[in-house]
Every structure is written in C-alpha cells, then in structure tokens.
Image: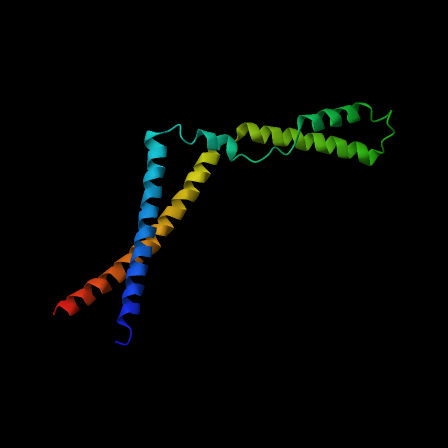
Length: 145
C-alpha cells in the first residue's frame, strides 16, 4: 500500500460518520417514543405553532357583510354583488372545514416527519458504520498476523 495512513484515516472517519448518524437517528426515535407514550404533553405547543395562518380575518368578514348590506346604496354592479356573495360563501365553507379538522393533525405530521428523518439516518448510518468497521477489524487482524 502506498499511503496506509490516508486509508486508515478514511476508514476511521467514515466509521465515525456512520456511527454518528446511527446514534442521532436512534436518539431521535427514542425522543419520538418518549414524547408519544410517556411525556404526552410535550408536543402540545406544536398544535398551535404548526397550524397555518387563517385564510380569512374576522375584520374582512365584517367588511364583506357591510358591503353586502349596502350593495344598492354603494352602487355596486351585479358582478361585484356576486363576488361579495361568492366570497362570503367561500368563507362559510372554509369555516366549516376548520371546525372538522382534528387539532392533533399538526402533531402527527410533525412526528411522521421526524420519524422519516430518523429512520433514514439509521438506514444510511448503519451500513456505513458496519462496512467501514468490518474493514478496520479485517485490517487489524492482518497486521497482527
């Protein structure tokens, strides 16, 4: 071998990287399990933090209702009246959809995203570590003989 020190550094470095990925992935899985089954209140802040901003503001609804009431006085065209009615119908539809949404959906999505990251780290880190560590062990046995 021309540069055994470079090969040794490479093997130990990538074995360390694989081990770090494995440890991080496993710790994320353990963290997720603890939050799910033991510390069940730990994710409650995510219910509010991860919800998207509301599409409609209550002040917008009041303005639209006022415009609808004064449609004739404000000299709105038929198209403008239809647009106001359409907007109010869309708002009612959105409001009904928001009532039916489970508040835990945001926590579930966050947990699934974390689990996917953790599993991918484990699936990449484990073979990386096992391969490089087996080569290191093989090299050490050859040096002893």
